[in-house]
Length: 424
Image 1 (cartoon, rainbow, N blue to C red):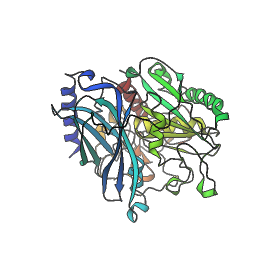
Image 2: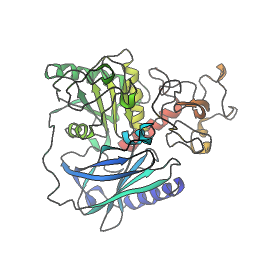
Image 3: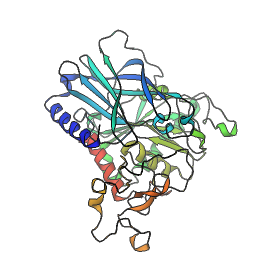
Image 4: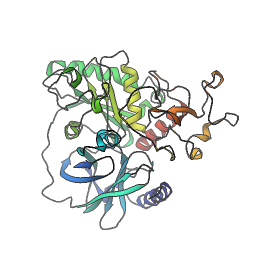
């Protein structure tokens, strides 16, 4: 299915849904579907694991159908009785990144994944879609679910108390971020609470977050780990922690992530949330983030403010990395003959649909790396891990360099649009 057809379907779906209310189709709690995504570099499939009844739905109740085209995957909930799309969400996962690595060409793997949505009142169909290298969308798998099934689990794992870091109002009209502690022991819970305050201030030190502070709720979960720190396999360091995070993801030392996604969602369920942020108790430089999956930052690095906000740009607004000098495990992450779905990269294949409206008419495209264009919005070559064929909006940005309060106008607009999606 082409991108144009996808956009038309989304507009029609939103029109249909606008005639109905949240209460018509959903209860005010969440249904969580755990599954495995398995495959290799060329193919994938989705396998059902379990369903869990969760007490809190932290997302919006008015905007339940995401209309952006971000992310590698999309999930849609279809009400069986009416045939209407009543919920849709886009996202990416660790599997979607892994598919671009050399390992995926020779070794098939599976990764746990989770989707959470308001608890449907009636029987429904859930469709899983994936995008190919040309960004065309394909149905991967579908399941029919009875929300009254007694096989849906009522018990929960990893139940802990939450606390408010920042509270601005009802979750359905706010962006809710839940911060999860990784590698903080029982005796370090007060440190974690102080770190939550510190990192909250980091977020609101950057535009456009600072101007929209009243649209955010931030929650912490007081969940101690047995050990301090996290795994560093390349140094022979292994720690017993709640979410099993680890440096050297895809054999990149600074890339700190986890494949234990079930535990991440178990902990996140202790608070209402739209976005998950894992704070790792270590001074080692690193982190990571994937759109509508989770973000990770370390708590004790001289670059911690940059890492925290940069990674949230990925997880919240699907902002792409604009650098191309650093080593990565990815191979051909972006096809150069199609437009990337991320809002801050272009191949110039269809620049009219990216940020051309923000470019002044006398700015050349591509834009040369000259001093007179230092703070100009244009199309500068280099980004998305390659130095040729991919273009970024400005010479420098928080998505390119280790800098603070430095999002370019294109990234700011993408962030503001996502804030409005959750908070309006």
